Image (cartoon, rainbow, N blue to C red; front, side, top):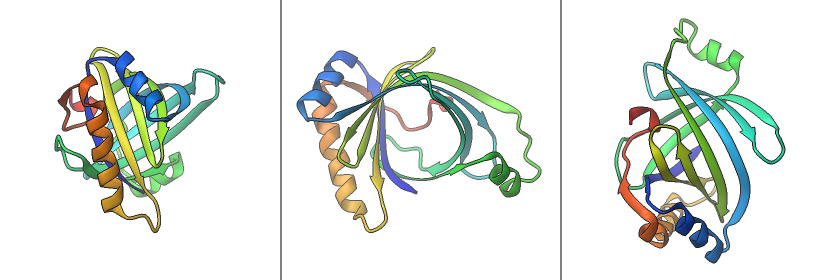
Length: 168
């Protein structure tokens, strides 16, 4: 899969929620996520355990992704994997955890853009956007949509973030 991503400090989460409502974004619920990062030769790999706060449903998956560490909107390539796929792709992987990130994620959807209002333990609040580039979608149009949304959220934002939460 491919996304156009952007991340920034979130200085006013209440204002960010109001912006979501004003632009008719759909609330998709609240997720409690624990990400355990494991070092791999290329990109990043994390094991995510996610609990839906509303339904109590628990989901586990491995997520591999690769993206440039830049503060502006950037392309991210990612794949969801199960245990068997991780073992096949990295047969000699030392699964020693390098970082653990715990967050409460409010998930909103604005068209093909997932808007995350994240409260990250020990780090603070962040806005994380993922513009989904599906098969047949124009990446330039998705990048433009993400850029437009960044502008709408600007009053609630602090500094842009270049890396992952594990880098902070």
